[in-house]
Image 1: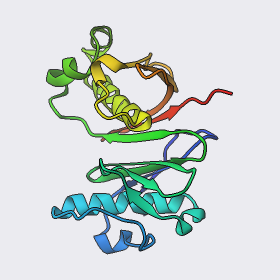
Image 2: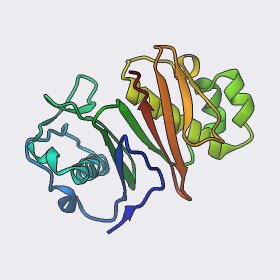
Image 3: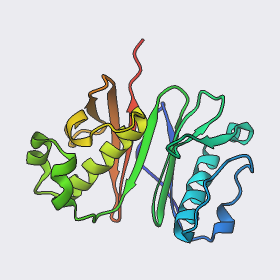
Length: 203
């Protein structure tokens, strides 16, 4: 079983990370009421199915819930207070859930010509801190993806509206133009980076 055990830990959420080695049939065990968009590309279909498999493993309660997608193809549970997030970058997939906090998760592999595109998603101060370290650029990209998913505002600018704090701290924090304060949990593996963004709740 190629489950990847993460050191990320919090009482506020659960997560499961997986490296795909199995066929599509192995992962097709979640409820039939869980919708999945029609995908022609076989790898994309395998990724999407495996991510839902991971989500299904997180809580037995999910058997009774209906998983649907919004107009941006983001999955959510209908008529439920569970917050969820899925991610995939073949062969790695992951799912996260929280009962009380909006959440985002992202898996990011090295590549993407990250040094070249970094000025497009980092502020000047962020770029100055991390431009000499491709792994930190990848981690920052992943963190902003997770924050974007957790906040859920279409069109939110990675460069101008999401500011990542010190990646020497774990969890770190992000400031978002919408006013939310976000905790970012992260972990680096030899073949990918993993981040989880959690919207902080205030009494």
